[in-house]
Amino acid sequence: MIIELKGNVFEVTFKYKPTIVDRIRQITGKRYDGSRKKWLIPVSSRVELEKMVYQIRPFENIQWVTGQQKQEEEEVVYNIPELPELDIPHLLKVNPYPYQLKGIARGLQLKRFMNCDEPGLGKTLQSIATINLGNAFPCLVICPSALKVNWEREWHKFTDKKAMVLTDKVRDTWTFFYQTGMYQVFIVNYESLKKYFVQRIKKESGWTLRDVEFRNSIQLFKSVIIDESHRCKSSSTQQAKFCKGICTGKEWVIELTGTPVVNRPKDLIPQLAILNRMEDFGGYKPFVNRYCSGQREASNLKELNFNLWQYCMFRREKSLVLTDLPDKIRQVNTCEITNRKEYMDAERDLIMYLQKYKDADDDKIERLCVVKSWYVSIFFGRSPHVEKYAMLLNL
Image (cartoon, rainbow, N blue to C red; front, side, top):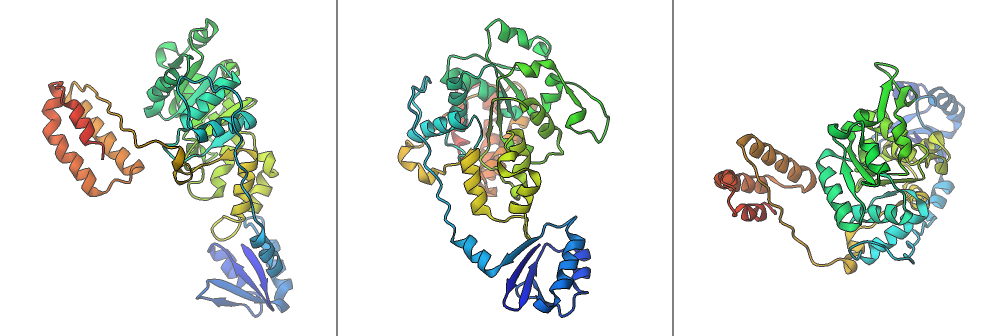
C-alpha cells in the first residue's frame, strides 16, 4: 500500500483485497476515484487512517510518501559505473570479446554474483574464465538437464580442465576422480541434486533447509555455477533449498540468468540468499519494505538496480555491445536417430524450445512440421542430407 499526501487529501493505492476495502470504507470522508483507481482520504481523518494502517500492517506493506519526498526520489540520478578492465591474461583457448573481458574482471572482484547478460552474449564463457582464473576447483555446475552436455563441451573448448557429467555409475565414486586429478569440474542437473548430494531429509513433508542433511562431499567444492538461476526464484522449491545448502560457505558462487526477475522484485530474494548477499540490502524485511511495496509489489526500482550493480550483479544488452560483436555465426549440429520414438521426442522438444525461447509463431512451427514429414526417411536412413535438415530448422 502506498499512501501519498497531496494537498489536503491522502491518496491511497493498494492491490485489491476485500478486507482492506471493507476497512477503508469505515473512514470518515473517504471517497474512491475510479478513473485513477485511488482512495482519497481527507487530512482531517488522518487518525482513522493511521489506525487502519496499524491494523493491517502485519499482512500489508505500507509506504508513506509526501509530495516532496516523491519529487526528491524522482530527481535522484543513479549512475551505473563502468565495469573494470581485465589486467591479467585470460588463460582461455579462445579470445573473448572486450565486453566479456570486463565481465570476467568484474566477476573476479565480486566472487559471488549474478551475470544477467542478455542471451547470446557469452555468460558461460565468462563464468568459466572467472572460475579458471580464480583457480576455484573443484567446481560444481548446476544447470537444466538439456544443457549438461553443452557445459561439458564448453569447459573442454575454453580451458584445459576436464569436466564430468554426474551419472548413476559414479554416484558414490565421483570424488575419487577429482582426488586422482582426472576431473576438476562436475556437472549436475537441478532434478538430481537430491540424488547426489542429500543424505536424508528429516521430515516427509513441510520440511525446510534445516531439515536437510547433506553429504560431506559438498564441502569438497570451492565454487558453484548455477545456470538459469531464475529457476530458484521461489524459496519453497526443492531446487532453491538444495542450491542454498550446497552454496553455503562457498567463496565463489556464480548465478547465470537473462531474466533474474520473472514477475516482481521478490523473485530476487532466493537468488540473493543463495549468493549470501541479502545482508548487503539490510536483510529480508528491509528489502521487502523498500523494493516490494505498492500495488504491483515493486518500488524504488532505479535504486534497486543501482544497488544490484554495486554489490552483486551486472547486465549488458546486445544493443550496447554491438561494436564488439561479430557477424552472426551459424553452427550446424547433426544427430543420428535410430527409431521413430526418438525422432518424435526430438521434434516435440524442438517445437517447445522454439515457442519458449525463440517466440516462434504458428507459421514458423508449421514450416517445421512440413519439413519434418519429408525428412523422416532421411533420418532413419542416416542420410548425409541430415545436415540440410538441420539448416532448414534454423528459423
